[in-house]
Image (tube, rainbow, N blue to C red; front, side, top):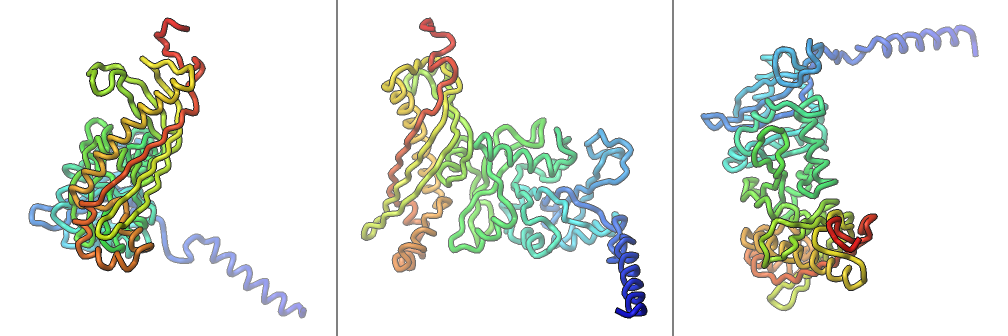
Length: 394
């Protein structure tokens, strides 16, 4: 290769390196952006959207303080407009920087907004833009959604991250909540007769994540809140939809007849639910099989020494769970809310029948006959070999 050509290539390489190393070749300076950590959506007094953005504050004087004060690592900005986009532009003008959504962790929508308006109007903005993370967590909150952004996170550096982490942990380890992402919600909302649930925060109390979370029930295309699922039914709804990962169940020593306060604890380590639809002429039968494996974590009144003891213990657990699952299905049928996606199964496997039943599917789901079967396997009784700590037989 001629030396002149080599020199020309070397010069081009040096120019490219200088441009890339300058850090501003695309003109996207960090100082031009305001990084949004979480967003709350409420209704204003005149029915418009009130958008509250929690924004990272670089160079804060007190990084140990996480409350939205003058020395905190973030601050909140509330603006009102007829659209989310319009409210975001007003916020940008007020801050003097363009909002950047790529670090956003949580979207909080108030119950009042969800009952009055179609939440799809809010979700459309975030799903249409390339900036927000498709995995951002979506929740519905009782009261003012913006009030959650005034809480102090416990271990995370922002309320948005704290709330997302708490919901994910509750989903994976306690069976009391479920993570619903923007992508998942977008897919479900485009399905026929779409009914789904979104995590609901009943009250904030002393923590950004309440001790009794549950779910808000939605139906699309209306996109409005249908009902708030009773807290007592939330774990069993997760079991029915095969989203239950880990958790526990308390078994009263006296059963239904004795109202004492002694309970035993059974840890659910694995749970698998299989739903099979069985159309019979003009009637629909649904078989639900739940297989559970777990261990005894606290014993107060049961000794597990023999195979018959194990069977009696697991039968007691299965009996209690069956009652709760039947009650939860009854609630869903009352609301005509096919969260179990039984209609989807009919659409896939019985297409012709589904075309006939689709028009009045809510009524048919309400009249369907369910058969619940729970199978419990005891995998571990602990180091005391199945004897209560207070037992005399030790």
